[in-house]
Length: 378
Image (tube, rainbow, N blue to C red):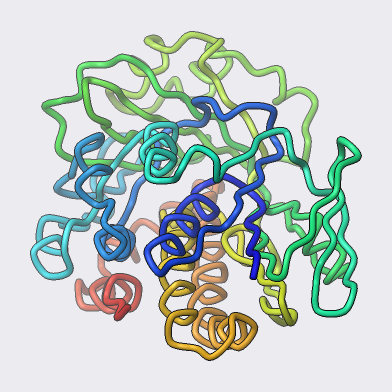
């Protein structure tokens, strides 16, 4: 029985590794003409690290990043709004608040697959079912048959769009710039977000004196003016924000900027469709406000391998996977969208009230949410 994974992103590569461990060597087809270093930084929480450990890649990944001690939310003057002690959560749940460059994570995952498993320049644009098999059509005119299809082809998945033509990619209401820069960050032990009337600014230390930052502001979708923003424009936007935000922007070159509108995927009615399964962003793309996008993709891959190993058929496993994953992943999509709306408040009065209420929030409420996300039983 042949299994194909569409997409060589985090979900697809991790799924390939997890399936290898149970004796299924899936073919991984990537739409891009080559696999190269792209993207910015990301964080992996304890639930993702636990999943990586289960498939034997945790140590290799953790050698390329670093653990931080806390996540702090501040106002534009640098005053603390809230603080999450991730040293404590690391002790309870395993390594938490781990940061790594996305390209480095991608490279490590790729190294655990056999080179012949991954084929590039294979953009699947359509499929058709013939009996119990699936015929894949690629943009280069080629075709391939498979018995099982795992679609890990992202938020704009052509497979999902054919299966669920009413599925909806939703603009979140704000746009984002990112960059990874050389910056003396090895001494920094905390990630931070600053919430203010001119937008939100995040600072995330990476390994080897690299620093990942992001800036989000409310805007209309696909704003032509914001598309043209330079570092100087962002410096003007955040000129009244606390140290080291202006310094971080001054250390950034325009060519390092990555820009995109933030979007998620409206909850789907299902992930499993007979011998086809949606995973990762193709199934439950989320806004980045909880740092769980990559984490849930990794969870998907490990749980998928678990249920396949325990099931009579892969099609049965796909149905079991759906039952195990829908509630959790859709909860995260919903919560992340709510947090983003809260973080992006740019009315000064409402923002001040939000900050006051968050400072008064009991630590138990935060701990309860942490437990819901991090305490995963694979």
